[in-house]
Amino acid sequence: MAGDQVTLLDFWASPFGMRVRIALAEKGVKYEYSEQDLRNKSALLLQMNPVHKKIPVLVHNGKPVCESLIIVQYIDEVWKDKAPLLPSDPYQRAQSRFWADFVDKKIYDLSRKIWTTKGEDLEAAKKDFIDCLKLLEGELGDKPYFGGETIGYVDIAFVPFYVWFHAYETVGNFKVEAECPKLIAYCKRCLQKESVSKSLQDPQKVYDFVVMLRKNFGIE
Amino acid sequence: MAEVKLIGTLASPFVCRVIWALKIKGIPYEFIEEDLSNKSPLLLKYNPVHKKIPVLLHGEKPVCESMIIVEYIDETWQQNSLLPNDPYERALARFWVKFAEDKGVSVWRMFRAKGEELEKTMKETEEMLQTVEEHGLGEKKFFGGDNIGMADIAFGSVIYWLEVIEEIVGERVVFEAHKFPRLHAWIKNFKQVPIIQEHLPDWDWMVAFGKRRREAVLASA
Image 1 (spheres, chains in turn green, yellow):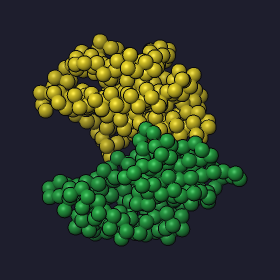
Image 2 (cartoon, one colour):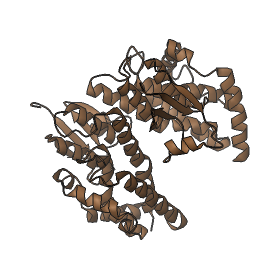
Image 3 (cartoon, helix red, strand yellow):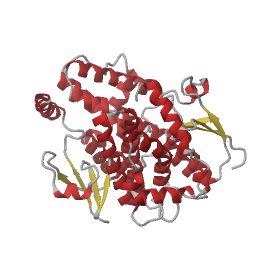
Image 4 (cartoon, chains in turn red, purple):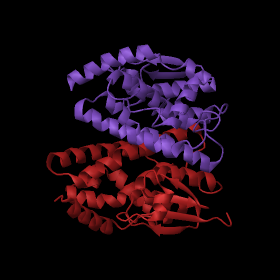
């Protein structure tokens, strides 16, 4: 839409930020990317997200939208003439919301436990993490994407975590592909799409970042 | 129209949200009471991932997670809309629904806590209330404006249950009127909406039931 001012307040390694980048790319929306320093939060970030003080924040014509999946839904509703991200049928939409919510509730927290714990806690986190990935793999079934023939809401919710797998696998000493080969094949398929490959970060850079975080938190 | 069934328990704030949505839309449904200490094959079949209530069955199709169910109800039956039409306003409503979901947990934790842990959860609840008081309502009567919407439903159960839980726990009151004037006005208005008034679980029953449950929970902790 002509005259639209779109800015994304984001942090390069954030899988939540990556979700928004993919959605914007799918819709062909031009935007300004604004990298945020999370250890020294800008006045702009605090003004645009006073409640959580977190990224991502989408600023559309001066008005902020917060929380990655809410932003993705907003993008889908505003730029509705191209690449629908949610299905049109209410039941299918409810299923998409359920699985995106599952990713939010399970994948992030469990994966965080993998790189912040050791010993028994780490082993338990790895097992729970793989169990959740297997559930997702089951839900994907034989479809090319969770969204069916094209990527959709659940794909956008999940696939950014893929670039963090190398970090989890290295610190946790396991391989997702050994347990969930279909899911890894699916992630690689997603990366063949330009909207995804341009939005996701290099797994090696993410790993280096996690190593630094672990040093800072005193986990080794 | 396919049959609507709701699997749940009457004491659940999450089930209550779904009942309110169904009543606002005027949708007839069959209530299937679930025994959470002995989960039924029906529940395990229709919510294999979380094994929790509420579960809405529309025909044979299950929908899980209370606010996802509420949104499904809103999209399937379009009378008495629970979300605004404008995408930005919808994003704001969703933001507060998510806030109620993420931060409302401190209220449930209060119910299960004592001593230091209780004080901690009470402080977290106070912070949650403070944020909503400052940022959530503005000058509006409801989150949804003049009529209740999805965010009101999400918070309605959190705040009504907070009031009940404070009565049950019997410690200092967190939700004080002079500290949270907007929220106090809001919950008063919310409880006076005719549909809500008719379908608010009975206070005395909830307190008595809750006191027994809390004793059992604390004893087994």
